[in-house]
Image (cartoon, rainbow, N blue to C red):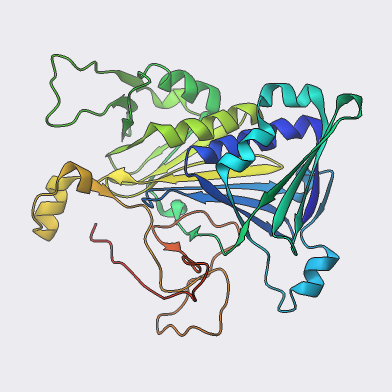
Length: 348
């Protein structure tokens, strides 16, 4: 893979890396012919992020160079797993990158297992970063967000102005929607002391959204940390954020679409324990068990056809850029061993 990012776009690319840093300590480079995917999943499988840069975003883009074609006789796409901490210093001080960096070349060295970042700065200064990577297939999540009964669309700046009213120590926020209004409010645990807790509620009318569709009254609680990363990326693109949500316990998806870049963050939500108990007659869960995982393991990789695995269940069809779906594929969880097919059922 070899591509070049122009000066004005270096800041955008760096902001995407910082957004992924709020998800996990590692991420994947996943180049395809049409562009470059950056993917990340946190360790608890409760948050998934995917950023896609179209080939038009780059000054030049080649998803496979001649060396990789020769070494990779089976034509398997190269996927690079890197640590976030190694890449963040490359794009440090993103606000000044546009002024000080003329362009950034990124290419893979397949023989040495390195991803090389070359920053061409003012006054002829060239900074080269050789970062080691592990070759493995990324976790791919598939989430049929078009089936969600509730869809909201709001500009990223407006959404940021709403969330700024919540204190920095607030880990989670609740979004409640009805056909008449939407409400962002503080999530309060059952055991919290109400006399000491500050509660914030912000009510919005449907007219305040660019798009407002509510088919089912619902209330979902999710983490703020990951969402703030997406908003920082959306803000630099001046893009609107679409929200797809269902009932509590089902994942909530935040996505943005631009001509040259797209992003999708899928977050787990807290399950409604009362509904879970009544429908499944299960014992009461502790708070740490309430979070319904947004991602689960799947029997097979639905994006890459593999002949060395048999699966009696018919495979689902997806697009390369499909965003999440309550199931995650880890084709190489251990880099030294062959993958083992496993499946965990979600009781919610």
